[in-house]
Amino acid sequence: MVEAIVKEIASSPSLLLKEKGEAGIAAKLNKEIISTLYFGGGTPSILSIDELKMIFDALQSRFVFADDIEITLEANPDDIDALQLKQWKDLGINRLSVGIQSFIEAELTWMNRAHTAAESIACIDLIKAAGFTNFSVDLIYGSPVLSDADWKKNVDLVIEKNIQHISCYALTVEPRTALDKMIDLHKKEAVDTEKQARQFLLLMDWMQEAGYEHYEISNFAKPGFRSKHNSSYWLGVSYYAFGPAAHAFDGKSRRWNVANNALYIQSLQNDIIPFEEEILTETQQLNEYIMTSLRTMEGLDLDHVSKIFGEEKSIAIKAAGNKYINTGKLKNTNSKLMLTNEGKLFADGIAANLFF
Image 1 (cartoon, rainbow, N blue to C red):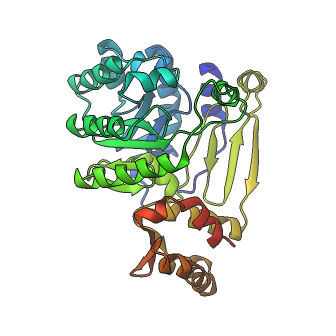
Image 2: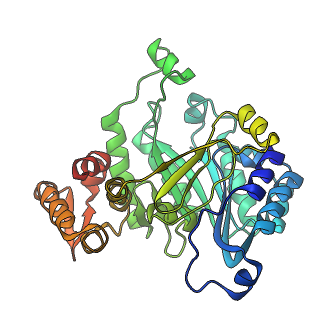
């Protein structure tokens, strides 16, 4: 797998548009500068340090790393120990995203997670002791076994531990999974969407009180600690992507690799990058802007829509948004449509109703 990813990095065509003011060293080397790097989409923390270094070396042969590059590694608590943390830090990883999910033992058991509540807490202390000053944890709310009181314990622990970034997701049950089957057989309790909504509203209040920015629907950060990498997705910035199921974007087209691991490896062994591609129409580009911008605290900029897509589109969006303003789900501040806390419960539906 690592060899295939390294080969894709070396042989993939240039996707990104040249940025204005490109640094001299990059121009001389004819290399593009990358400002963020994210190891995710699976469990990259199971890779050995030598395997990670192979990928790093391939990337540094292909690109120039910005001086202030943000390099994030996704990790599970049970993969984290003092040696791993030192090796990751020495390699250049300066941000971690840890799949905690919960600090409550009963909930971790219900979700069939490999780590324990004690490991969840211990790994945070290890990360801080290793000198990482920027890391994020994932928490899940809305599971049948998570009471509001336990949900508050989870959030309070994040605040007490002074964790800079938190990503929170409502528990979703994917079709044809083991959890879906157990619920279908009445061996596990089904998800209560009203409870999920209540716990999300509580979360927003708690995080605001603690001084976190709710900068994207699922993401909260202390000032200065937003995920630079994920923010680029929501802002429509171009990005490369390597590996099975990886999605890349150049501003107007999107390409994605085959998800099957064996087929991905076999294709690269035969000097083929197994991807599909779509060119986004102007309408698709506008709809994507509507969807992603509404998820952020900065909101949907009607002046930006007018400038890029035409004034009539901006007028139409404003008109369609009025019913949500009247019901308290949207607000219009300086020609920017922003979701209220209640509106965030309906973000996808509101965005879809503003689509062209």
